Image 1 (tube, one colour):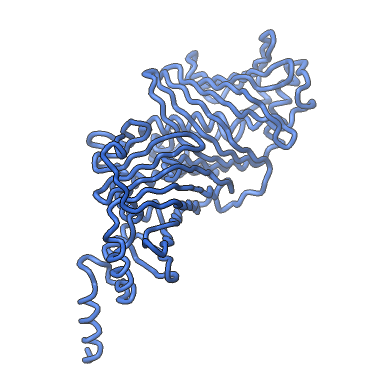
Image 2 (spheres, helix red, strand yellow; image 1 turned 180 degrees about the vertical axis):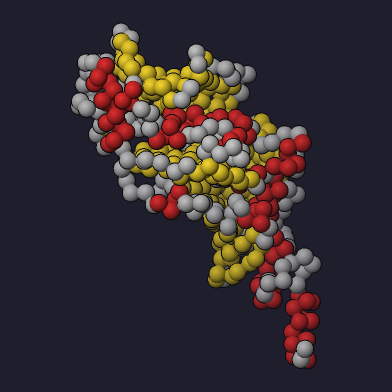
Length: 206
Length: 242
């Protein structure tokens, strides 16, 4: 190995966070590090959301809207108000919809639970940082947009890519677009974003 | 929704949306069906006149314990032998993605990281992972109408079709030709009952927008509210590839 190549390899090794995929470019990591610093001050978020799922097989759009709240300690709630009111709470205790735990229970939960996937998405909604590169292959689309491709084959079975558009200040997601292997695309747009609102436990009660 | 209940929901949804697209009857929509022969002819024309069908819907599962779960979903049917059904959780995630193409099927459960595929009737296939049923007769055709029998039930005609060891009874209103109810029997036991209501015109053809499916044995009831249909629109054949 030439001295220049060795130096480059050393630099890459130094800037790569522990666990990050080998393919993450140093310049991308630098941007993620900066974004991580800016979003570090964000502990809680609250916003209105509009979600549109574009269903490929029928070329139709399923629309829903409501409010969203997030606590970086691992809690997230989607209060859907239209078309049908439903409250979805995702946390360490599981996934709840309409006040009831959903998904596999008991032993099956460990095997089939979607919770790890949902928790991974919680991180995305909280903002991006160097840590994002441990779970995703990150591409910078422009100054405010990133594309995340799951490194985990398990997650990739459900979502093939996630495009995130960040606000200028604070640098939190204002638009998230999930693409599925099936061809479906879900766009979530956030508005009236509140940073660090006081969110007590009742906000995340199932 | 548990896996089994989800599978059951998928099955009855297939039955509800797939086999009765309610295309053009042999007489103008709303006209009386005057004989058993006309009732059978109406069923045959429904299938012949709808080569492709798509629907999006909300489904609500109601259990005997008053529990209730809702999901949304979509289905596309391309006769004679292709169909695809998806059910979404939380309005976003594709929880079920089922495809039948000819004599092959595939069932994906992305949230569980599961995929199964095989051939209908193949002993090595995991039938339970194909929703425990061969859905093709439900989606893609009412069966051998040439062998159908018809009973006069007063205000309705009942068309009886035998499918293997099962039989299907389809009740058609004499007054206006609308499909009222369908019941699937295994022997003498009714295993599935489907009621159709809230007919509205889609391309001039009455389609049911409210469908109620009951499992008599399981004390389960599924309410399907269709939000949109399309008929005979081009369908990308790649949707059924796997």
